[in-house]
Amino acid sequence: AQSVTQLDSQVPVFEEAPVELRCNYSSSVSVYLFWYVQYPNQGLQLLLKYLSGSTLVKGINGFEAEFNKSQTSFHLRKPSVHISDTAEYFCAVSENTGNQFYFGTGTSLTVIP
Amino acid sequence: DAGVTQSPTHLIKTRGQQVTLRCSPKSGHDTVSWYQQALGQGPQFIFQYYEEEERQRGNFPDRFSGHQFPNYSSELNVNALLLGDSALYLCASSLTGPNQPQHFGDGTRLSIL
Image (cartoon, rainbow over all chains, first blue to last red; front, side):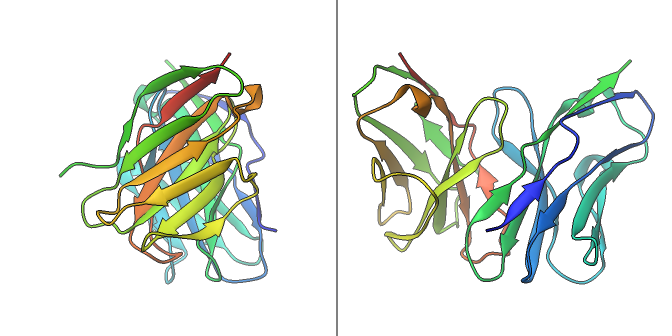
């Protein structure tokens, strides 16, 4: 079965510093990859997606992610974080053989003033 | 353009009761998925509906059932509620296909006493 691992449960970072949130998945078939953000008491909002093509994808709010097939990773990055980026971030994977999204356990990003 | 809407926002039930949660998909979407998000965890896939049929199911017991109506809206029913069913229940809609991003509602917070 597919599994998605977000190694860092909590990431504190100072405002205007860069950040990387890590995501690894286990799958032997072709996958589609997504990052979502969740603010308190809200649903999940799509940040970016990788479907095919260029392995570097850009999303909203200045976030980008790089797909690495050999390392089965899809790490999320932002060169300079803002206070408003404080939220929970989820990596999600779907396989081209199914319809289910598999989510990681999330990374809580806290931006420190 | 209205996004995914869920009702009610909050619900309190006691063990053994039954509950129905409702979801209206984003305009133009024909596929609805339901997820359970326990506190501090990532969303767990319950099932997906397409063309009024359950197309795929996650690892949830038969106490969890659903329905999709001709207008694509959906209901999630949970029977014989257990304390462990306390969670945020998220509805997501999309176009059909594993490469289609899922758009989430703000969820229904279900508390079991």
